[in-house]
Image (tube, rainbow, N blue to C red; front, side):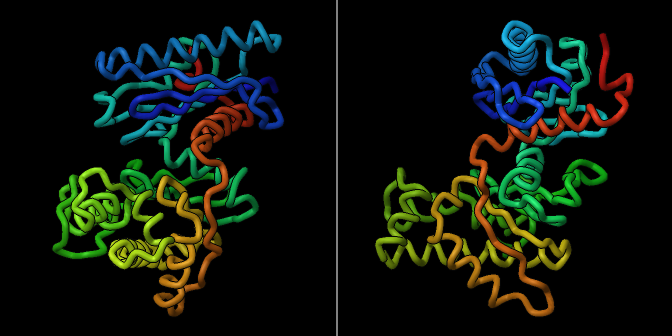
Length: 314
């Protein structure tokens, strides 16, 4: 097997790598998505970036890649290779897997960004060796990935792992999803930043500043933080009850607070579990490179199966 192409597309930027047979990145690159020019331009930029990576592999690594993996945000139909919807990028029902396969002349795989990052954490990072894990990303919103025996469950309709939309405060704050009281309205980095800004009377205050103030013993910050941790623990216990994971991996910007987050979260979970078994609660290990590494795994997995006509077109 040769190297593979891995692409991780975000709202404003794209990260990519050529990944060798042993999982080592051979080349890394970044590009803007160009979303200000519309969804068709974003798709064109993705395909063009992928073609550059293919050419780089030919020039510097002796031949084209064997396969390509692409991780994108929003609603993703992984089985059919379709990017169904992404608010930040403006696209709807884009057959990205087929477009990528045709442009590159190689098998291609499409995955959801958080699930793909969770796949990397499960196989290569903090969940390595765990047969069952739950990955929770605490960023602007909250998303998750359910790991089962080396793969990540997408669900029947591509919504598996959306832990941020577990209702933890019935009748509470309105969520853009249409519900009220969703977990991400209380425990995401955006929610903590909003609450901390209100407590401080400073519109620019953010979650990182709140974490620093908690570490310094600020009582207002501690109240804001405790509210978030309690909500997070309530949501996670619901997930533990349903999924019974062996390992809980917590990543995203809020997890960068380290023990300021993990110590009270473990205590809050301990106080809530009854018959459930407490999983190992660990920080994510791969940082913002998880999505790219996971896209590489999606590509590599194609090489152990027989490609279908929808996975490769020359």
